[in-house]
Length: 236
Image (cartoon, helix red, strand yellow):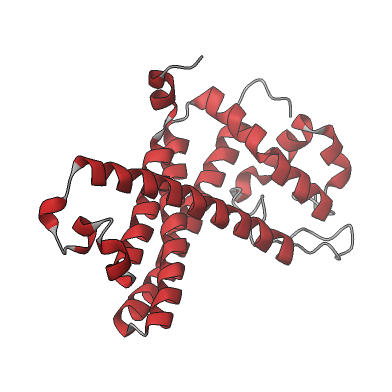
């Protein structure tokens, strides 16, 4: 049976930062908009009775933030997958290059594109028949297979090069994705409450967090492709 120490050690920086921080931001937002309803439970958040702040209240807030953060990241993850499906050009001819809002090869440096395609075909020989006319990309079906291969490829890269750098990019991307989702929720709550200041602030922050999230994701993907080409035991 796993000990408490094992569970504690299983928490990584993503769990602590990218999950808990957006969750805490969401709880604080609810505390702002629903001051009276939450004052009795989290009085120290609303500032109505700061002297009642206690370790018990802080612990409750941390657990609630962790749970809320997981909900936010799960919703954001499935929303992103839905966007992929919505904009995937599944009706295009088989020889047409796949162009989705998160095309798996869009982040490959141009000088490595042919090498990356070769490595992917070595990892999954079935991709050879799904290459596009230019030999530098894949058809729609091939792009979907590359999407499915990404977790396996990232695991190989992490095992060969170390996980620290990729973990940092993952955390940064997760934080900004979570805060983007929180900003969208705050915008809706501000519209309902008629709070012009909160509405304007969240409206400005939404594209900022989303752009930063996409930038970190692109950097993470690009570094993964670069590292993948450099793994010596992969046949090209």
